[in-house]
Amino acid sequence: MEKKSWYRKIPKVDMLLETEELQAAVEAWGRTPVMDAVREVLADFRRLIEQETDESILLDVLENLPADIFRRTKKICSVNLKPVINGTGTVLHTNLGRAPIHSEAAASISKIVSSYSNLEYNLQSGDRGERYSHFEELLCRITGAEAAMAVNNNAASVLLVLSALGRGGETIVSRGELVEIGGKFRIPDVMEESGTILREVGCTNKTHYEDYEEAVNDDTKLILKVHTSNYSIVGFTKAVPAKELAQLAAQSGIPLVEDLGSGVFINLEKYGLPHEPTVQEAVNNGVDIVCFSGDKLLGGPQAGIIIGKKIYIDRLKKHPLTRALRIDKYTVAVLEQCFLEYLREEKAVKRIPVLRMLTESYEEVRKRAERLEQLLKEKCLPAEISLCDCMSQAGGGSFPETEIPSCGVSILPEEISVTLLQERLRKLSIAVIGRVSQERFLLDARTITEEQIPEIAARIKQEQILDKERLTAKGGEL
Image (cartoon, rainbow, N blue to C red; front, side):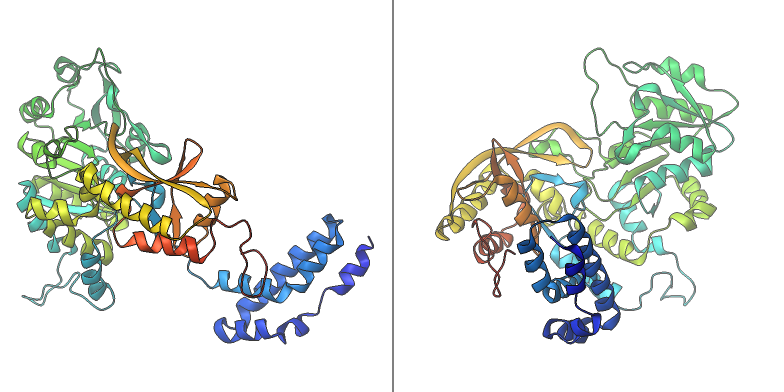
């Protein structure tokens, strides 16, 4: 194959810009992104000429250059962060954005974030206000704390507390609570960054009250208790309850800080889940400062929420790091909406999506799975479609050993592989994400809403997801 002749066949940019496809692209998105796409597509084609020996492939690519440039331009100008349908059964799926919020709450929030607001403006006095004021009283009412604030995530809340209250002195932590969470976030590293000195006590599996008591000295600034929400040590173990540590902290004049990790306001045992320490329990146990995530079991936005005694929260609010770690108006709006739901537990369990998915009965989930199975079978798709019992999980570092009985729809394609089915669903404009179980593709109905069911079925049919050949209107594989 004569490569030079193929290089000569590459059309000039002016000729490409005169094609119908690129004229439409320029009109829709402007000349600059179209030119970027032209350069990228032509560069790809030159590399293909260098590597490819089959001239029929090169000819096909050459004939479709305008269409490829149009698609590349559309991709350049399209938003990359998109909604997806979570059929994995993992409720707090970190890669899929963790906790979704209720659609009515989102609609209410849109009115706030699309206009000016009283974010830091006191409408009663006309003076400058505080962004925490929109949810602080509400949060204190729910938890029983004296004061509250929030930063951009729970790692930030721990960093702020240690920096403001522990810098230059020792912070006592049980060796069994020096946790690591996702992204290699480790308690010892955060402590070092904050300027406090780590004072380990006890052993990996056992820490006694006397270990803490003996570690307290004139250099002690804090006692830190970390809830191991993302793993469990079983067997020959012992940990000192927060209530006992609170007594030691009070006697020593040292603040007790508890990092609850996930954070939850409702006792989930009544819904069949294991006991998870609630924020209210920590406050009642006498903990001075409690930190927890907003987007895990709480079911709100990404945030690090800090509650506790006013004397300490006031110091945190004035610390220089607070400015760097503060939440924006979007987070403030979502937090306020989320906390309002918790004024009535029965309302929160139904309206906060995370709580609804975690507490929903198997029978309710099965009804949705049956609906999805029925719609898929009605489409007469080239696949074996069946109802399938499965296990869901909380995810997000919560309830690490707990599996929740669930039900979903299992799909075994007749014409394509399960891997290709996964890929095609992942590349839809609204991606459908599931999991492979026993060499079949599984959509777990626990994390799929009623409204999403007809959309899934329609997309699979209309976009020929299960067909061996998927043709566009102009021909060619999608």
